Image (cartoon, rainbow, N blue to C red; front, top):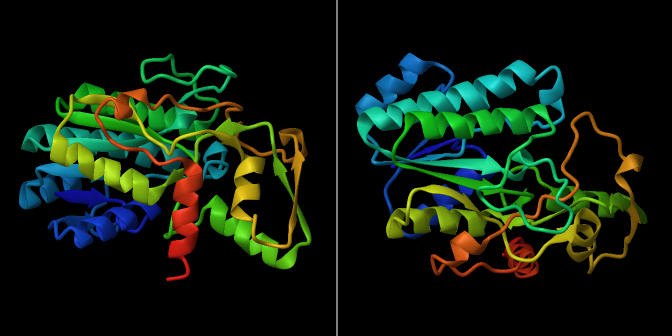
Length: 279
């Protein structure tokens, strides 16, 4: 078994979970596996012969991907993913590719995005991740594409840590209230990825995040409910960003629920995560 993106927040969470369960694995960061180099990928796969590949390596600087990081974004998220998919096909490995809600344009407003809904990414990051999905489908027979959203966890930068840090130095914070989605705890996501390996459901595309939805403002309020800081709602026009974000990217989780996998609400997951930070 191989984990790419070993130093990322999901890659590290997955390693922690597998170590707890005493499941052996190889974990490759970019210094040991350069996914943008096709020959290097093929050589690595021939040597290691992984049976499962959790492809967590990604370029995730969404705003930088609009300009200075644009080429690297496509090289890693599209071309690199194609190399991994081709290597999986050649060695017979099952590929699990982690994708994003940003493949959707967020214009639905009320109905949740289903796995077979039309994609229409608004930004370069979403476009590159969608090309990655297409590369997986075109190059690999045995695959799971898992789209996720609003990821937070113990490792790496994320919204929870940002809010906690800002609360230490500010009396009030403003957070956008007109973008809606589903937060995802890396632990919950890692558990679902391992579930795919143990249960082997039908190959294809799945949506996974924690249950229930919220705005970024509601998410921030829950994160900071025990802090003295005041959280104020504003609309996204107050926070112009280089990359356009979908206003409503709530993804339908029914396909995962039908597998019998229990999904915690984002509030439950956040609560457990915040408690875990003190242990």
